[in-house]
Amino acid sequence: MPSKIRQLPLDAVTHHHSHDFHQIVITMCGTAEFEIEGLGGLINPFSGCIVPANHEHYYSGNARNRQLILDLPEDAPALSGEQRELVALFDAPRFFSLDDPLRHYLAFVESEITHTVSNANVFQHDRLASTLLGSLKARLGENSQTHHERLNMGQINRYIQHHLADELRVADLARLACLSETHFSARFRLQTGLSPWQYVRRQRLIAARQLIMQSRLPLADIAVQTGFANQSTLSHAFKRSFGMSPRQLRRDFPVPSPAVSSHPRRTLAVHSTPY
Image (cartoon, rainbow, N blue to C red; front, top):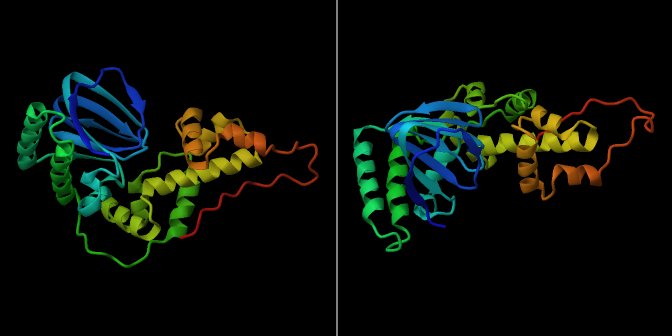
């Protein structure tokens, strides 16, 4: 699926959603506010944010704002084939500012998307996007030399389990390994095959599934205890991952009544998939 570049103002009213494609939002004028899975920031002119796919984000615009938005499916030409390495930009949410060369390039991008006939070449937006992504990666990335020392996944898993209900950030996990966020994310993906955010989301879902099957807690409480914004967010992510809703799972695996069981109630232990 091709990428799409568009311009629009953001509403002053705060909205929130998630989507199955990556996104880059850059403020061209005015200001905007974004919060991405607990990471928040104000986006001034020629600043922007990286929104990885399936990350719940809240956003609003201030004054007469105008945003340049890149919608980037993971199978888009700008992120696949020879450009595949650019997908590492979306391992974690982050905020950035543009230097003068990139500001000039954005002026060119705006001119192109304004004056190019939309149906003339369906991949023109991908060509424009790949240049911007490559330039961002060069500026935001660090030394790409591969480090072979393995991360301590036991330590990382214990930290995740103790903070499931908190606003876990990649920076928190990176500090455990004494690495920068970018370096940590690259090594984490190399070792596990997942970005840190994908891994944390999976651990939240595993914990939620165990609580659904082994407790009588209301689903809203389970959502809070496992780090989801609300019951609806949990249900959406749960069905996408497990193919059924939390309510369906609870119907299929009812918890025995405490009066029936002769054994003392045990504390739930959540186990992570080893790597």
